[in-house]
Length: 184
Image 1 (cartoon, one colour):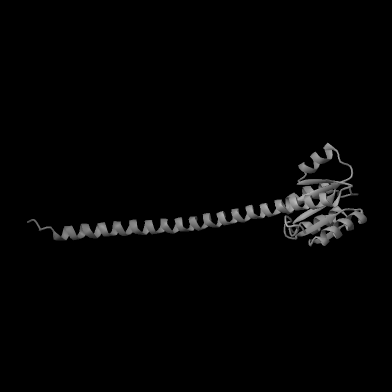
Image 2 (tube, helix red, strand yellow; image 1 turned 180 degrees about the horizontal axis):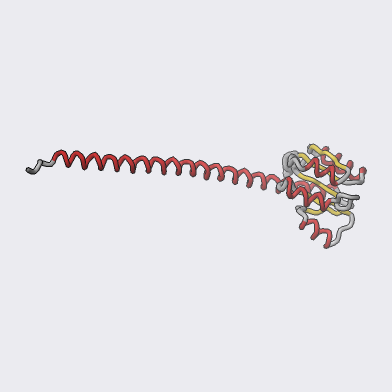
């Protein structure tokens, strides 16, 4: 693994062509990634919906449940998981449809392994950036919640102090009334 490579991740390879699926998985496993494989889009969706994968590499054209459907459904169930479309039929229409369905990148078959490595690296960097963003949002939400609680406590304390001031004012009025000389 080169120094510029991100740390190893979990990658799901979805392709109905077993030879391609195995080639990709073996290469990425050799780089230290944990790879799992699915032979169709439906199985790939079931596996990837947990959000536990750092990247999903999927062929676009598969019988039945294709890669575009997989990307669209994953956007709903695991929105921070980058989906890279792999295809041998690259057209502008394919690329546009892939992006509209939630794909984050596109890899053309036949591809060289350097292109695969770069594509996976970009996808993992995207995943890392999305996780950092999600973590930052969670921290901000927690701070806002803490501030809301502190605000509510302060409001209660203010209400208590106002009631105390009002009570003390009435007591002071009673003391003043008692201290006034009686008029005959």
